[in-house]
Image (cartoon, rainbow, N blue to C red):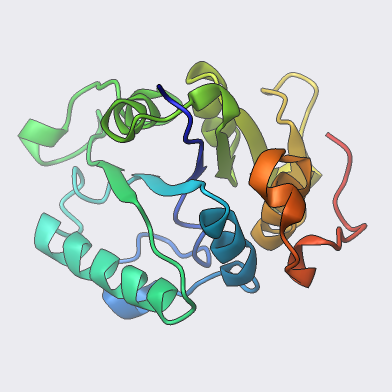
Amino acid sequence: MTTKAAVFLDRDGTLTEPRHYPRRPEDLVLQPGVAPPLRALRDAGYALVLVTNQSGLARGLFDRRALDAMHVHLRALLAASGVALDAIHVCPHHVDGTVPELSVACECRKPAPGMLLRAGRELGLDLGRSWMVGDFPTDVEAGLRAGCRTALVGPAAMRRTPEGPRPDVCAADTADALREIALRSAGPLAADQDHQLTRITRRSPPC
């Protein structure tokens, strides 16, 4: 029976600091304050899954080996704070790319839900109880199309328009969103004593 829920995380601008086409391991820097709520969510039974569009592969800006090195570094940064990712899913495609085999339309590039659906199958996830957290409306749309609840973070959350996809949570930053998700979640999280999860900052705008 499927019982495990997940928190799906976009990478650039959500889990890590925004940077235009990171290409080296040292280009990835964790967003402030994300480790404690991530650790508590995982300890409470949530899978943590990275789902990231990386069109730099299709554009020939870096190769798969460079991307793998970046993700080894990212896992090490998280491990230093007691956090582990259950899976990393990457979409390498873009229709305007320069690498022919990757310059195609696909079902995995957000806002398509392909990466979330694949992770759901592979990890046996309850997508209806899962969350997608990202800094662009395309992240929200991907989450909604996969049947997840969603959180929009950063500048996009502050300027969200009525015409865009409506997230369940809007937050000034990723750490705020993760704390809000924890507080909205039932079950094991209700007994969690981590003080990081008992405070909601008031900087977050209503969705």
